[in-house]
Length: 245
Image 1 (cartoon, helix red, strand yellow):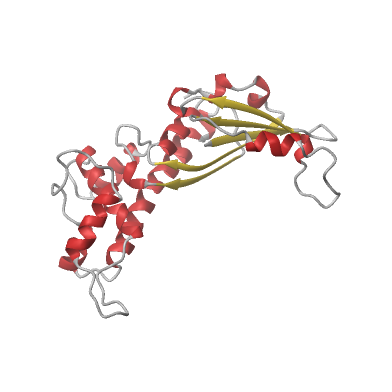
Image 2 (spheres, rainbow, N blue to C red):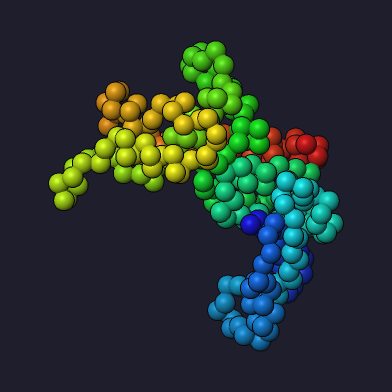
């Protein structure tokens, strides 16, 4: 899920407003922990749970605009706002970034991306970045679109697979076995099996020293780089903070 927090700089005992956004049901563990924290702190504590106010929004991020769904205090210039998200699988990270448009000031943004194989070209926020990278003179491609992106996201699954090598037991991991595992870690789309070349075959044919795992990791980093460029050039650009882009 995703969360936003802020506090008021001028308050001698600042309270933190923690806003949680989740699609599915929850056991309310965060609220319980904070509710029972009254009086359970010391001067050395870096976090005072008794000074945290919690608001939970139960909704799919695709249908949430943070600038209107959350209190006006979150959008004021007198507060510090930090965004934290973990395990926003695949396109969830891109949807979360889109939901932040319209918030006047964000002082920090931390997102733990995962499941790159579940990303979607339609939701991906780094499309302009990829078009600049791959369709420039340096990239050399005439076009970069959904098909090319699907290949890239498919190859990210290799980052959690073993390269073909002789194990301690003396057996060799075959390319065919790795291709089967590659299918498992990628979104199963009907008719796609066999449509794209296996990353392990490409690594073998080109003699890449990084192996399939290294190339898969590079594909993950490339997808996240496009997201960082979106944040830098669009979402958090100085001239976009007040444009409600």
